[in-house]
Length: 607
Image (tube, rainbow, N blue to C red; front, side):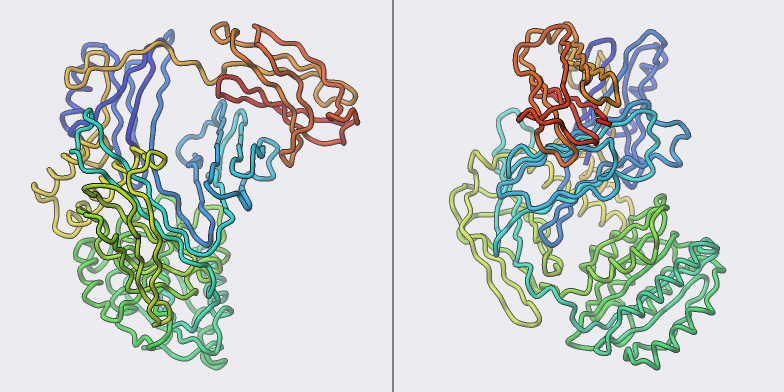
């Protein structure tokens, strides 16, 4: 969620405030007519935002900064951070310059850090600062990203982990005095083997799936059959304008049924519209077998276009049809698909959404998806906090979580201290209780983002009601009120800034140090027995301390070039040796310049 915006205009920094969307648009239009310089940021849906800064003339220096907060997805001790880089289809022009710096810190120690799409790129570098801290840098010029920059972070952990972050409001806050908390529980990862399943694979075969997508879908369905065991029960349902099942109901995964299902797959063609409502009715009213994992994989590349198309009505109907508590795991094919319906289906049933991007193989994603959902689930979950007086707890009813997943809950409380966090539930129909004493309100865990995460959970609950009941004035006003008080951007608000903002005085500060606080020049490059490294600093930072080091590709320190006061220009010579005076091996190395908490880097090729 985006929580702050600021823009710089000719060395001055202007901080935005949240306003009701129509009011913000009117203020922006008014300034435009006077040839002033406002900025307006709006959410247009599905993590897509529109930023207007105008007018910008050829002699102006304009840049902007956004601040956002999120809880990283977590599974089997691994959290995944995704930086949304993919620009294909948004602009035909490459990025002139791109740089990403990630500081990864953990209270435990890092086990592995994997960068699946760019890890082997020469533009990527990972430096181990300590067992608890890793620094990742990625940079390139004239760069056209086709994939997002993802980092998979795995920690060393033992048994059950319970923790909280809290935030105690200060007088300048606008959201009361009661503190906020975010609790999470990480149950043990054992018992993660596949269990017997009753599983229905629902596949969209509307006209938009024709061509390569249909070929990939057939391969994915065959892979689904390959993964079944004789202990499983299954069915395949395809839908477009109408719905057709391999069988009228779930059957055993016998060799005969699987062979017959393969023939059914081979005869499928893509034709027609997208009748999601009828497909949901068919899959949710199948006869799921007791004492198995009961689930539906729902793959589509479109939004409802036939039958019932109102999302609120579809969601209400799905709740009514789902009498067997079947978990729905949607797979969205395509990056421009609107995900509100699929997200709500998943959330309401304890599932999750997987997105197949343009470059991904549907078959590979489906195989990974099926592996993730086939572990046993923790059910009938509840969190309690002993004598801690809590209020406004979200969600009130915890969803089912697969073994190796994470249980989270937001809330507010009256008075802090050490209290027990108690998680109860069932695993494979066997009750369990996990308890740990946790400090609420400690300075080390005080984080203002916790208040905004609680507010976002409250807003999401209200937005679900709006989807179900329509844009009732009371619900919309509640979203706007929370959005403004907690400074959170929503579909009904906008972030607005201008030099004369009368509603919230604009913060004007001295120009922040630019990201490019220095430039690095290396020659010759490639080098053999020496490399000249020239560091040119901006005038405003020449009095600071600077450290210049060289790392190899695995991220190990090779040589410290300089550690002392900076000057306008530093000219250094590296004899292509390590700290022991040995000539380094051929390969790619990284020169890293650190000053005032900022870092830039450049590659050196040793031939």
